[in-house]
Image (cartoon, rainbow, N blue to C red; front, side):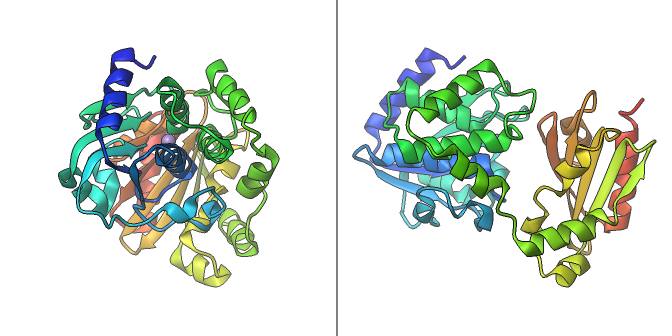
Length: 321
Ligand SMILES: [Mn+2]
């Protein structure tokens, strides 16, 4: 799966590099942060100057990750080597796009279907569950250091992007990787409590508010839930507190496509889509210039939230029986 030549080239690149950066995308999620910290901590145990570079603010959900305090905005001058993780294209780096100009070589590690192969060296495989699983392969393939802290970060990365090991992107290999991570004495129960059983009360209140205003369409095969600025004010929650709402709706038996529309501002709506069965989330979001994966994708619509609801509904109906 991972070409030997690529790995040899990567090994040489790492050996020849003194300053190494590791960065992922804006709006970081578990796969991003877990992959970044996993690879970053591993490289740090070599005799290298390693910069784990923040692309955005870090959601509260992830401040428990081992080494999270290492994540900083880039304050160096140049990089010999830059690892870009979990990004389908350069734009996903947001303001950190300038890192491309400051870096001699770029390594692109990703599992998005839509990856534009922008690296000097590319480890891109959309059949793999997560960037975390790719990082595991690279660490093992190059015999880079692995320890409990690194293994826990990779566990979080893989669990996050597989819906707790439930999506079609999970393979026997995914489970073998997890089994091996257990051999580094990871505390999976602790990680699962932090990831899935630590919701704030404000978030629960926002959840109730949003869910009680959901709309079902097309024989209840399409669910659309909205989170407005007004709801955030009412519940004292933040936009990052919408985590889990769209999955809850997807889990309704009649629902094939569940949309969450987040009102960032009056004319900027961020859409998250989760699908089941024959509905391809990546295809629907592509119609709006976004994308992602078959089961989980996103896009942004520059219109009002009411109009955005009409637009995504129209698009989703095209893929329904
Ligand atoms: Mn990912």
